[in-house]
Every structure is written in structure tokens, then in C-alpha cells.
Amino acid sequence: RVSHLYYKTSAQDAKVREMFAAKSVKMKAAAEEAAAEKAERAAAAAAAAIDETDEAQQLEAVVPHIPVEKFALPLQERSLQDLAVQVYRYGEERAKNSTMLCQIYHHALEDRFFEARDLLLMSHLQETASSLDVALQIMFNRAMAQVGLCAFRAGMVWEAHSALQEMCSSSYSAGGANARMKELLAQGIAIYRGMDKTPEQEKSERLRQVPYHMHISLEFLETAHLVSAMLLEIPNIALNQLRGVGMKRRMISKTFQYFLRNSLKQRHPGPPENVRDHVMAASRALMKGDWKQCYEFVAHMRAWRIVGGATATPTLERLLALIKKEALRTFVLTYSTYYDSLSMSHLSELFDLPEAKVHSILSKMITNEELHASWDQPTGCIIVRRTEPTRMQSLALQLTQKCSQL
Image 1: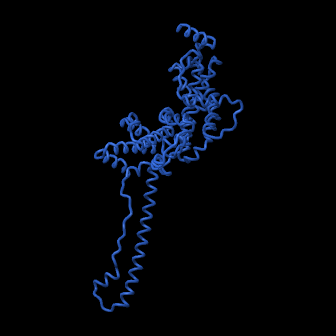
Image 2: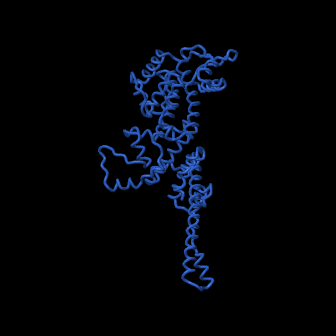
Image 3: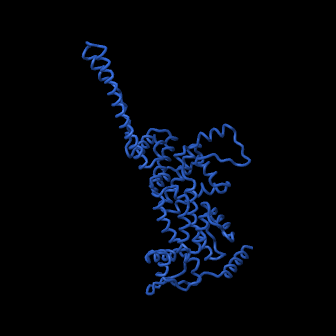
């Protein structure tokens, strides 16, 4: 019963209950009408054939006993939790792991990210996932994918990228995003060159496939992974460029940087067609600090039409706020070397953010030593300090470090 409940949201469960309740009412009414017609026919036949019968026999002929089965769903709203408690008490170890993954999936599906995260960390299943059987590994991949989507819908891009990075990065390295993800989520059979499968292996893979109504949108998964990587990696690239050549570079997503390098090599990029093209076009706009064009590319992806307006609208609103924030950070890190001071009111107008929000973002950058500057409170400006080494100085530092290693 847990496996039949975990992939349904509360709204879907309520709709199913309403549908079956209406169906049971119709079935009961039809049964009563059929019983009444049958009773009338029996009464007419009895009156014509039998003149004198016993009163009890007449009663049985006129009102026969018709069993009507009640069709109802007695499960309560917290039924999944109640069933999980019973499994944890009396179930076997494999049943407990499966129920735990079902609960994690259901929490993430209901946008309860912190409950899903805490349950995942307490279970320690991520440490023993490689030793589980194939069915539990598939369930673990589905739970991790749903946790990443939940974090993405909530606007927590770092958590979303951490949850989806391993699955999506291995998919790209395997030569095709959808093929590898289909195999990991049991939503299709991947065919690779030079790998022949026996009929028994193909049969077992087909038996492991999940039904279509339980599928997770692969396009939305790819969108969540690449958009999260874009919002994390673009300011990081600007910060690495500001710090110079000789400084230690920090890399968040090798996959995204590989796609971005290939995209920047194109002199005249065409209009975006798939998810990757849209994200790369948005990344090029974000590198210039153009948050409006970046948001347009992200908002015109086909994945938002797949998930529906109820999910797409609040998610895009959170992404718009994140894009404005990261565009401001990227703009300041990229162009701070060309300015002596930056006006807070001008930045607030340029990025459509409140002045308090701009002050908070820039102050955090100064505190984290990402930007060497200070506030001038009377004028409401940020004064940039020229402490970053030039390219010549960075190359000299790099040469000195290499000579010291000889």
C-alpha cells in the first residue's frame, strides 16, 4: 500500500477519493434500481402463478436480498505515515529501506524539502546505496531526483545542484543526457554501442520499468540541474577572473563549464532550441549582467509548460529574484576594476532591487572578501579599493611560484 501512495500528492489523492466516492454512489443507485425492477417482476410472476402462498415466501419473492458492496477508501490523510510506522516496527530490513525512500520521495513531492533532507540524512542510505539491490537503487535515484526538484522549486539552487549533480553529470559523460537518466530512473532502456545484452537481461530491465504515470520529467530535471549550475558558476567564474591567473580557482560544475566553453567558441550562435541552448544563452547574458534577457531565456523553456502553471509560476518568481541577485554580483565582480565608486541607487535601479537588498548583497561580498571595497555612507556609494593584481602582476606571481618549485 505504501508503494501505491507515495507518488501521489495530497491534491491527487483527494481527487481520486472524490472520483471513487461518486462512482460508488452511482453504483449503489444503479443496484437499487435494478433491485426494484427485479422485485416488481418477481411480484408480478408470483401473483400470476401462485394464488395462495405463505407470507414469508411472498416476502422473499417481493423483496429479495441483494448484496451491495461498499466502495470506499478508509485511509486517512496521514495514512502513508501510519503505514510507514507499521513497517518500521514489524517489517524486514529491505522493506524498511524501501519505505524510507518512499517517504523521502513523498515529502519532496509535497515540497517539504527539509523533512525529506532530514529523513535522508538520518537513514544513511546514501552511504550504502551502491550495495543495495537494483530495485532499491532505482528507488534511491528517484528519491534523489525528486529532492533536487523540490529544492529547485523552493529556490535553493545549491541544494538542488548537489542532489542532481551526480545523476546528471554521469548522464552527460555517458554520451546522452536522456538515455542515461532514463536508465537510472527506470524510465527507459538505454542502448550503448559495443554492449550487447542477453535476452534475460533485457527482460529483467523491462520488468523493472516504472509505469508512465509515475515518470519524472527528464526535461525538467535537466533544466533544474543546468539553471542551478548557471546561477552558481557564473559569479564564480567572474570571481576567479577578478582574483587573477595565479590564484587558486574554485570549480563547482565541470559539466557546465565544459558546455559554456563550447558555447563561447561560437562566433554567431543561433537561436536556442533545447534546454542546453537556452541555458547557455542565458549564461552569456548573465555574464554581462543583463538579468532581463537571462530571465527571458529561462522563462521560455519548454519544461515550464510540461510541469504546469501551478508549479511554474512560483518557481519562476523565485528564479527571477535569484537571477537579479546573481546578475548584480556578476556585474560588480566583472566591472569593478573599471570603476572608482558605484552608486547604490543606480545599482538598485539597474537591477530592479530595493536599496536595502543591494546593500545587503554588496556588504556580504565585502565580508566574504570577494570584493575589496568599503561603503561611503553620506553619499550612498561603494568605494572600490585597487588591491587586485593586474594581469602582468598575476603572471609574475605565477612565474615566481613555478620557479620556487624547481
